[in-house]
Image (cartoon, rainbow, N blue to C red):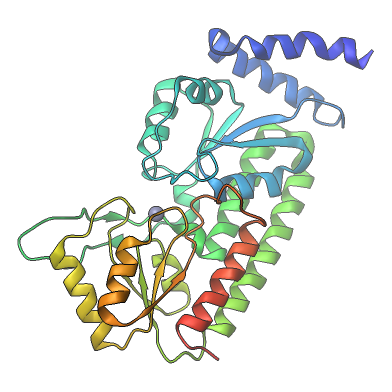
Length: 314
Ligand SMILES: [Zn+2]
């Protein structure tokens, strides 16, 4: 009987783009109605990039299927959406995104009028990025720093916001979502404590990185971030900008230049070569590598290992 019952619903979701708004509404009703049925249809959530998928999946558990709009191995800042991506977004019961981070997602959410959770306010984006003074040339734009997820406590706050919205959509699972959010918070607080302890006593506190992804991490653990490029990894550093960072590296005896996984290490290696510093990977967790093993916690602990070595801590 359950197989027979599932067939029409599967067919209706295959209608895809044609039934955009109507389809999303119906799916929502179906999910709400079936939430207490373990075999019931999952809430279909599109998340705009990896850390939001991770949080949504941790909190939604079996009741939620969270699909990333940014595919594995793709750098998310300048994501472009295919027609198929847009259709998936239109079909979803909920989109979880960070406004100001991926303009294509912002535009799609607005034009589709999609059911969406913008995590920007929960993340409390209070860092403004100011480019290194660079003579007369404006090589890089100032703006609000989006990279909140590298501070575990901010990610915990976003987890609470996700739990609240999922609970509105599937009230029957509220207790589960809230318990999952609390469990995630406990784990994130433990991670934050590990960072604070490991980074307490370091020979250096200057964090030279390829793009300015680590502002909230630096703020949380009392490090000084110096990014070679700006808030987005694609912005090419000008020769003046590179020279300014090279001067900083030499003056502060910086021993390690950190570069990231989804972007070419060329600039970091050039800078390391000209200053005698080493390079090491620090993953901004904007996405996982194609062949990545592990999750947010594994990458954050690998990052902590890289930091304690690169900054000579402990
Ligand atoms: Zn970034």
